[in-house]
Image (cartoon, rainbow, N blue to C red; front, side, top):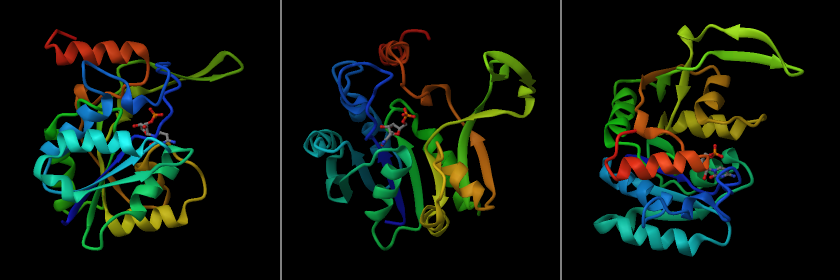
Length: 227
Ligand code: C5P
C-alpha cells in the first residue's frame, strides 16, 4: 500500500502505575492497544506496523489478530526501544518498499476518531511534507526556573500536538537518519531539519492516556458518559 501507520506501543507506562506496559492496560474489558488498533483499522488501507515492548510481541499479535479482520496480512509487529524516538525508528525499518506516506500514532491515544486520520492524510495528499493534528492550549503556560515563574507565555499562538502525525516517507526517513537529539514527537524532528509542518484540527478524544485520571476519562468516553 501507499500508506503505512506506525503504532508506537512500547512505552513502560510508569506514570500510569498499572504494574506493566501501558499498551496492555485495560480501559474496559479491552486494552489500550486493542482500542488503538480498532481506530487504526478503521482508517484507510495501510500497512500497519505495531511497535511492542520487548518480550510482549506475542501479546501485541493477539490484539492484532482480534482487531485486524481481513487486514491481518498487512500487519508487522516489531520490538521498540528505550525512547519513543527509538521505537519509531524500529517501526520505520519495517516499512515496505511501496510505502510513500507514513502516519506515526501513539497507541496511548487509543480513542482517536477516524476523522483525525483522514484530516492528516488529506493534508499530505494536498502537498504538505508533514502534518500534525493539534488543539489550542487551554491552560495559561508558565516558564519556570528554580521553582519560580520567570515568564507567562502568550498562549494565543500555542497548540498542543497530538497524533497521528503524517509525513512523506522520504522526509521522515531522512530526518530519522540524521537525528542527533531526542525529540518527544516526530514533527519536532522533521521541523528541526527545516521542513514545514502544517497543522490540522485535532480532537478531544485523541488525548493521550498517561495518568490514572486519563484512564478514567477514557473509560467514561467508552461508556458514553459525559466528559
Ligand atoms: O510516554 P508517552 O505516553 O509520551 O508515550 C507516547 C507513546 O509512545 C505511547 O504510545 C508509548 O507506548 C510510546 N513509546 C514507545 N517506546 C518508548 C516510549 C514510548 O513506543 N520507549
